[in-house]
Amino acid sequence: MQIRRYFRYIALHYLKHFFLLLFGLSFAVVFIDFLQNAHRLPDAFNLKILYLFYTWEYMLSLLYPITLLFALAWTVVLFVRQNVFVSLFSFGYSRKETFRPFFFSALAIYLLFILLQSTDFSYGRNRAGAILHHTLSQQKVKDLFFKFNNNFVYVRELDPIAKILKGVTIFVPKGRQIEETIQIPVAHYRRGEWYAREAFIKRKRRDQKGRVTGYRERTEHNFILLKGYRPKVVKLIYQGKALRPIDGIRAWWLLHRQGLDSERIRATLYNLLLMPLFALALMPILFFKTPPYKRFVRPESVWLSILGAALLGWAFFFAMYRLGVSGTLDPDYGQLLPITLLLLYSLIYYRRIRD
Image (cartoon, rainbow, N blue to C red; front, side, top):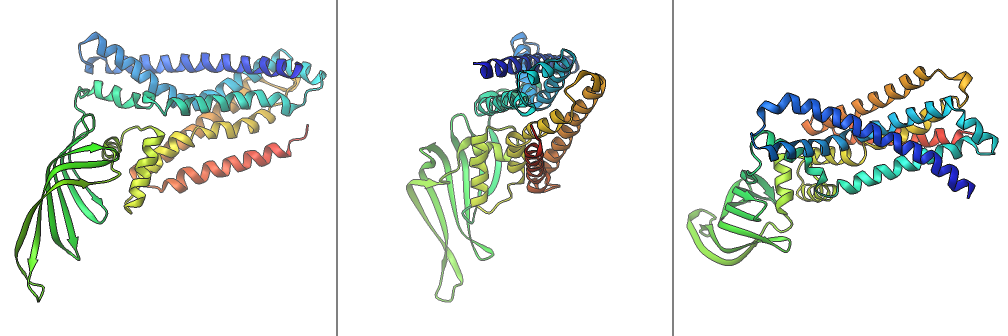
């Protein structure tokens, strides 16, 4: 009972400070952004409200990693000033035990945001941008050209809402020449594949010596194409916007299977799933380096060290994300490797702490 009570006491203080900081920071940033872009927004009042809401959603996901560390600094400074740690030590609790409520609360917040980003919450940035640029109703993607199963595909128009492809041309190569073309006026998506009622196939006719003598044309009904190409995945790959983890994994697997470059998708996924872990990795380092006794602590130095570490870490991984998205740096080296090393160092550091 005592363990649950002390854990709840620390966790509630930490969570209270976290949500106060997160909402305060996000509202401030959204307000500043609205003042900067108010003249570019549509005149409709409901669209302005939607823009504020979608921008706020995006800011929550952007700011929560550093807010985890800001809340740690606030709570630790408060507890040191009030001698809370000294009281807990006098009841027999160790430093590791006093740290666990912070860590598990932060872990729960991380998992909560991963769950939120698995919903339409993750598309806040896209929707806010669509309102700002007056393209909210323009969901169609035009003039796509990509590789699929060693064939080259041109799509005149993709409608991801209606799940329709229009004006599809598939080029089937043989060596360095095009051997066959398949033209499909309209294709509909159903059960993981695209279905066309008619496909017009034009193939080269050759003589016994392999010389082209003409073309053979035929019409094929109930034609299946692009199996595994989901409408939303296709749109995300070619527009490079925010995405849900499951959509990102599908896009990554699809590009990997086709032998195509996946740096943009990997960078986005690493930023979504791995970047917030830097805050969890820094928590034990910053917590145990801060003396728990009031006479050894200067609050301003604690704030400066924790806030500085939070901002530097956040800025570094955000810069690595931008470099990965642009193709300048491989995301495996710029994002995956640094966060892995930081997590390993944090784990080793924690294990060396003696109660």
